[in-house]
Image (cartoon, rainbow, N blue to C red; front, side, top):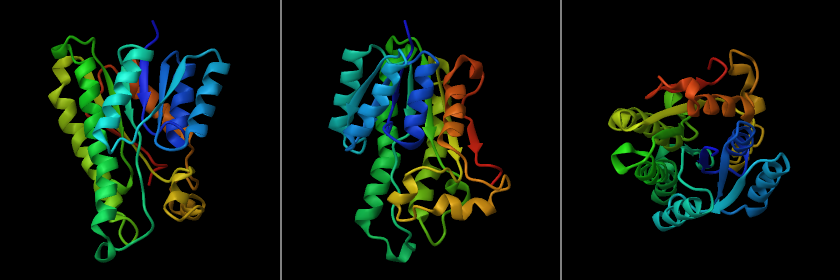
Length: 248
């Protein structure tokens, strides 16, 4: 039986690259999306065209009831989860802290932090040997912004990813004896659509000279790190935060 992975925010960027790569490695894939059903359908179409198994699952990870429904659908359509990739996240336009609204902060932390917590909670209920599960792997998506701070642009985003780093370390230790490994990947400047969501579609190109490797990374390069952390090749790795940032 193929291992089963749920990838939140799996319809584009790093999430889509991870979904496609996971399918190539024999995983049955649940591709989560919030609004863009066409993009999620296209990822699933590509997986199925390659002989893989995949479904789409709609849910806004910031809304608990939708997360619960998403996990129920994965249970019913694919079976018991083996891996969770907490990839769903949001950014916002460049803004100083003294101009940030509470609404912006609530949206940022509800998706990037609370969403990761609630999805992990539901995954643990299915994976943990304490709950009768067979174990599994959780990979959280952090950001190099957690180290750099995002000054003058998105301190709120950076802070949310700093919370993801701490969450990864604490959860890894909490469930280490229950067959679950928890790690994170911390991408740097990656050429994906998320920059356009923050009003800076050319940001990856503009920032490339500041990266020691002198280029932006690709979604596939991040996906390869995620797949390694998910796999048995990383069987002795938990609580790690792996930088995929070109040295930045």
